[in-house]
Length: 211
Image (cartoon, rainbow, N blue to C red):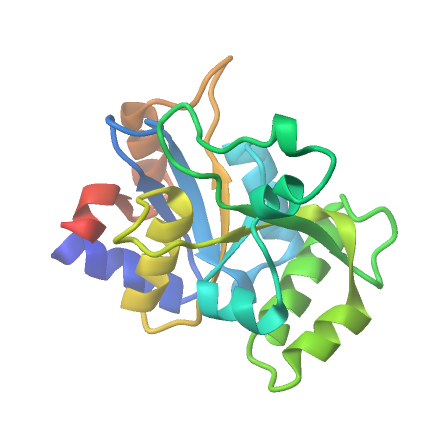
């Protein structure tokens, strides 16, 4: 499918894609890009043009290598088990893991700081000694939320969709994503598609990837 190829090519060239998950799910669009191509300027773009939570999606193999767990599992084994979100309003288990900062950031929230955390984490994912480096160079809580993919066959959220697109592009499973927000609610499918067209960014839907 040409639009999927266009989106994959955009990622390979260091660009963006917009993914709309579907009317039957969140009904939201996310701007996504490969973590290795993040810059402070792109963090600023995500803040201003998308406006949602800037997250870092990783595949289950990377999470396992680093010893990362889902936040729900961590909370279930703590005194906060009674408030743990076991299922979202649209029926899925949350993808959230822990929020992190790189050790060299100051506050962690600035464009420069978040770009540093994400770019260093992207390098980490390709390192042979990644678990030791992770423990030495990152800390939690921080300002970049990690998301762990459950596989597109098990969950069809933006985490899994972004990782599936990365796989189609032949790239490592480490993707930045941010929800596109409008006034008081998520940007509509029509509005997010219009944004993508104005900015020459490929627009795809979840069904394009899992069908």
